[in-house]
Image (cartoon, rainbow, N blue to C red; front, top):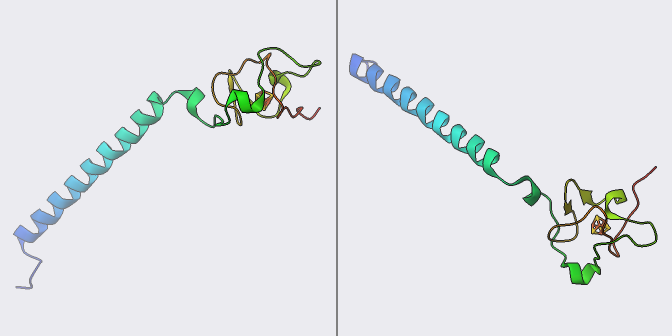
Length: 98
Ligand code: SF4
């Protein structure tokens, strides 16, 4: 008989396949669960301190975060760290294209 082709060998290959599929299911479930529990505001938020950006909670001459290309709904910014008001402003303001 050829080595590796007996009933015992076939059984262990089947078992290996079952264990592999079970492992893949468990791993993918963990990835989906971690995506669902991540806070959305944490994605893509900036790291520049508000003080450095001269951030203020009020508009500056009509310019406000809600009209800036860097603003992330509902209260984040690509550049500045922390909670950002749609009515705030900082020196990195860049108007959204019309
Ligand atoms: S004005 Fe400044 S803080 Fe506001 S969204 Fe734009 S870059 Fe961010």
